[in-house]
Picture: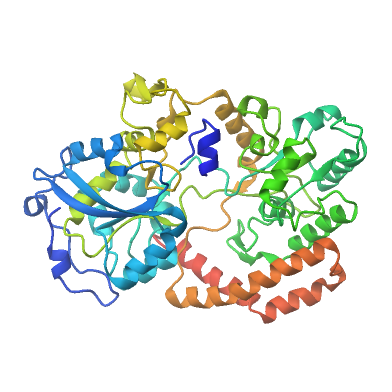
Length: 539
């Protein structure tokens, strides 16, 4: 994501004085039994600013991309003036944040809040039931988070997707209802398509095979050498999810179909079809034979040398070079159909983060005020401030009623995204908030609009989230993690062997039988139980 921040103008998208919480005992499930106080008791306004009349100071733990001192960021200073809530920051570099987070929970030396927290569902359940994180739903439903409450009421799936099995919300997501890409997509090299006279993109696996064959034999880069690489990858990790959709599979591990049935992907016939096709491409040298050994940098070098016809990246110009304007000549790959009915399909982004981006800990003596603070970030005004900075810095309103804006020159010149990283903490990591459509009114570029059109035509009509953001119980999590640890290793090893021909596909039945012995059927059962519980929530 950081790479996208630097290279594109696309806006990627992308916290009450109530100390009785700490004094009260814990419920049997580990959650606090305390109810949020009334505004008269806490001195916290349920609407308007400042949130508290007397300033309060809280500690915040977060990741740090290392661009600027958070204390001097205009966004932080503006939020403090607006709310009367000041933060003392406990920052850790992104690469070591997970380790630091574990140490903090293990020691019990907790901050008041965690921001950009990347709290996995398992961490939310574990630290919530242990009492380190407090339940947030009393404050959301008690009037201290009207923006979040409105989002939850209008989108019940979001609420139940962040409600743990015992019925608590321990962390908040980043919400982006316009999100499409779950993984970065596939792109065609437009100059090669033009050289081959391609007027219509492949719609079936056979048409795709024929096009890749032409790339191999017809010198579309025009250098007189047979150096074209029809399809490249890095260990298949970058293309696997996209290609599995050609055979009706939404995710490489677990997905639920439109009839609410859960499948463990590597045991399905569609997965076999994927392996057969990739093996066919490998045997005919249409799939890069350095796929299992090359680095992303080596793949990129081939792209910049105009050798690659079909590849994965966040944007095509990250691999081929150039800029967004030139990239509009490189079409997004249209997923192709196989001989399996109902294909292709596309595993689409669920519209919210899988991990929690914000949480309040049990040492926080001002949970009501803290909820008011974070709720602001789920409003259009708060998200504008934290994503784009204060008005007059990088942008100004052209019509405040419709939230339309225009960019201003970057102070001192330079790259807008790099400068944005110096004014707001919402840079280079996933942070809490709501990416509403109004956020980019007037700021989108021609490239942004082209990307949206490609998505609308090619991916959205066949897209569905592979699996909801549903929580496993501690017991389910322990069992699934243990089984998947061995299964994932085995599946990855066998994928490479099947694709390269080291293992003949005639051994498919033995492969499936081995997965069943290792717990493949049980994984399917566990996730069916999880899905059924999630699906029944709120009924």
